[in-house]
Amino acid sequence: MNNEKEDILKVLINNPYYIKSIDNPTEEMQMIAIKKDGMLLKYIANPTIKIQYEALKSNKWAIEYIKEPTEEMCSFVVEQAWNAIKYIKNPSKEILVKAIKQKGWAIQFYKDPPEEIQIMAVEKDWDSIKYIEQPTEKVKVRAVEMEWNAIKYIKEPSMKVQRIAVSKNEEAITFIKNITEETWKNFIEDNIKVLKYVENKISQVDIEEIIKDKIKKEDVNKDYIIDFIKDSTLKIDKIKFIYKYGSMKAKATLLDYKLSISNNL
Image (cartoon, rainbow, N blue to C red; front, side, top):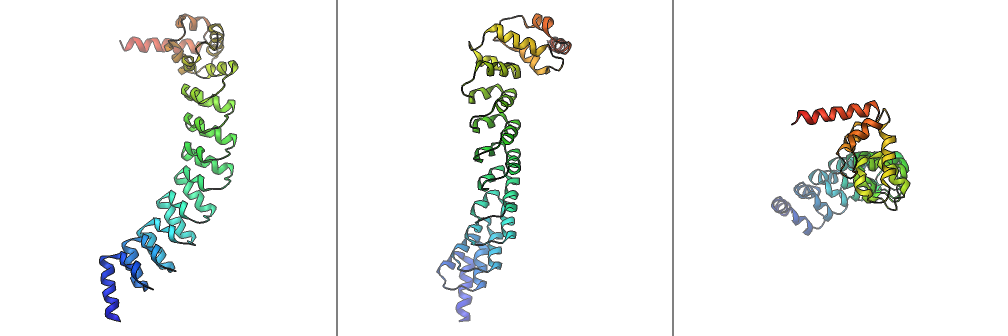
């Protein structure tokens, strides 16, 4: 019997898959096999905790074949690969949070996540919002603050969400439906670069009024002024317009811009 056992052990060392052909393998036989390939746990009936741990050390994906993994086992595999959580039956909230901290996408495995967990996910990976069925307004706002592209995953975004996205990048316009005239005016105020999408939706008179109100403010953003100067859609003298209607800050920004152009010639 001992000789037979020794022969089996030798075979397993060279061919761990032989474990599939053994009825009631000893723990020693199981250990040899799963150390070679943890996924062979699939073929071992009622493995001990010790064998399960060794399987996970060999291959984290062996968690799929552990019916009731311990919290420590779950933590071990999730630390190595966040998406291993999909093979964990009924993971604890602590394990889910650990996975989300590694990859926001893990929120797809969290049923009815509270707002703070949703925010955690989008702060880790902004596009995690696509895995949140009913994100709160605060979560939507945080997602577009992280990355304007997040708006494409948001159904019926609020005006606040739209304006944040557009202010960060005018291309966000392409993901917004049914834009009213009033909304266009808001967008022009937020980001002058949207003018290339306006076409004939708003009169030039109205556009100029929006820009006047914007550039007369002392806290006007310098980038807005520079983008206005560079704009090619409005057929007006931008320099005269700023000198006539702009705040001191707007005029100073124009002067700095002209000097920078001169220095680069």
